[in-house]
Length: 166
Image 1 (tube, rainbow, N blue to C red):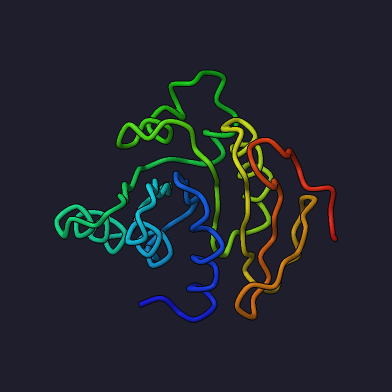
Image 2: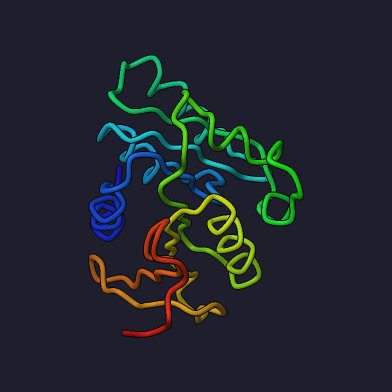
């Protein structure tokens, strides 16, 4: 089940066709909801949780219009990677081609920079929510989405980095 604030986040992210969620852990609700809306989602975590893995299996078994793939990966390594081999599983999931957006829910400060660097490498938009008590450590535009703050670090693949608060 998706909370009202997460449902609003899904509404915002649903404009993108191919997304990467960083740090899915064991909270696949946003990724699954996006897949159910016909989006291709690759959820990445250093140690994906059983619920995330189960959600990926269920979306495949239920014939969901989109797709949810869960991949083991470290955003620090993905951001630093010199070659395309590290990001190929993100881009090539389901033959989906280019990634449109990278997002994260409850992204801790220490992973914000690497997440934006990964989005830069993929030439994708980048948005995230924080743990709530932390402020972003990267330049962002703040948007209110469903009563929560959504931080936009890259507007889209063509727009580059955010210039900061609106």
